[in-house]
Length: 128
Image 1 (cartoon, one colour):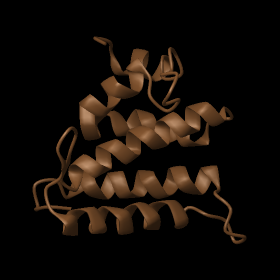
Image 2: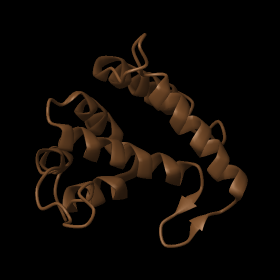
Image 3: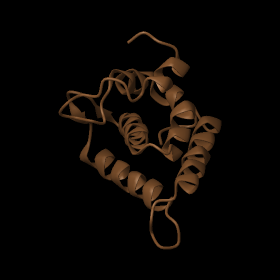
C-alpha cells in the first residue's frame, strides 16, 4: 500500500484479514513505517471503535517488538530481548489502567505519548 500517513490512518479499518482481524493493508503499511507512524497511531487507542483500538494496539505491538529486536519471519534476535519487550509491553498497558485496573483510553494515550516523546528526544543515545 503506497499511501500517505493520513491516508493510512483513515484506512486502518478497511479490508481486515478474515483470519487475523487486527491486520489490514493499512496496519501492515503503518508497521512498515516503524516509529514514524506512532504519533498518528497512538491517538487511535482512544477511538470509540473497538476494532480501531485493536488495530492501533497491533501497530504499536509490532513496531515496539521490532525496536526490541524482533524480526518478522525470523523471530527474536535474543530471548533476553523478548523478555525485555514483554516487560515493557506489560508496563505500558498496565500503567495505562485506572484505579480499578481497567484500561483507560485517555491514560493509555498519554502514557504512550510520553514514552514516544522521551524516545524521540533520546534517539541516538543507544538501545531501548
